[in-house]
Amino acid sequence: MKFLVRPRKVTFIFLSDCANDCYKHIQGCYPKYDGPICPRF
Amino acid sequence: MKLSRYNFLRQYEDATIFFNAITCALAVVDENFLRVLDDVKNNSYDEKNYDAQLIADMKSSGCLIEDDVDELEQLEFYRNLSKYDVTNFGLTIAPTLDCNFRCKYCFETHPKGKMSSETQAALVKFVESRLERAEAFSVTWYGGEPLLAKEIIWSLSEKFLTLCKNFSVDYNAFIITNASLLEDSDVELFKKYKISGAQITIDGVKEIHDSRRRSVTGESTFDKLIDRVNFLLNENLSVIVRINIDKENIDRVDEFLDVLSERITHREELKIDFGQVSPFTDICKSIESDCYNNEQFADIMLPLYEKVLAHGFTVNKMAVYPAPRVNFCCVDYVNSFVIDNHGDLYRCWNHVSNLKQSCGNVNDGDNFALVKNYLSWIQWNPIKHPKCRECACLPICMGGCPDAMRTSNDKQPVCGAVKYNLDKVIEHYYEQLKGEILP
Image (tube, rainbow over all chains, first blue to last red; front, side):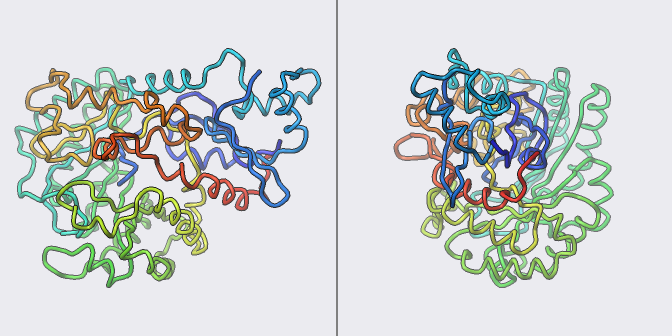
């Protein structure tokens, strides 16, 4: 099994943009609410 | 052991690709992996028969789960944990609803008036009462055009920073602005008041942008906005150029990306985001025929981002990669509010100035009643809907926009773009990343 994007641990860490972190070979995190941004705006 | 209900297996070229929607892991797999899958399905799984690292990877990627795990229950647990968490406090603040632009698709009216000093004082008290339990406080400055009331932004920011210091709370802010009123001297205040980035909408080449996002005075703003984007990037602030897409400007995106790559000095730092123009309210109903629905937008989104990457905007590499969600947006977090210049509180950005959707007012203090407009959003739960419970995309969609469901004819969840384009997205990222197998 060869990872292209690593799995995210289901630990809630205050961090945005974690897709980039997972891709950059770091075990990522599950995103927690980190700002009142509406994804549609 | 059993298999996750959120596993995806796809064949591209000669490769078998695995994706799991809970962990969002993406991997190239071989016959050993497929053998384990078959054995689990045939009830002949015996862990000692397989390579230990393979099994560890299959577990960490979410592919293999314990028999007594119910993933829907887990999702609901994490969703509640996040939803009722009060350690993060978020506000979207419109210090004015007035705007110096008249964008053809805007869903707001633009009444004159700014937040009064009384409402500002009440807002500061509201914030103070919530910071006692918080670890982090984030603000998005919003409008109207927030820079029409920049003195209020500075004044409130000063007070927020003092409160955060007193309560040992982390503070960060962001601004949604048309940037036409952004002066060089403002950037020092952005930094002082921890406004770390801005979303600036430019809808296409000069002719397109100026016709869609008209200034009140009728003057062209395109060149000024390009200059402001460069200015903020040079000052090391994060900038998202938002391109709102509909049938009117889709055909000229390439041309605009050519212009951006010529004129943006820090291309590698610029984030580009495509917005889906939607007739959010009756005010902008007239543009409905130009809008794409989610399914149509899903079709065009990936090719748009491929163009962005081809133009050298490399920071956008993972822009469309699915992310696990426990909530769709700020609507159902107990500690998130949208506030307009009158101090009226809302759950959703679309509802600003629509008093029928208001859930309170900061002038009434923090003890606002748990009214229907608050609780109905907090308790909105896509997992209750069969359509979402049965959907393998639930962990990366989480029911789509709750307000879109509210305004839909059948009152059913409105699936996000990922529901329609996941296969293409997986294929895209396999192509992008296949030369970068992780150690």
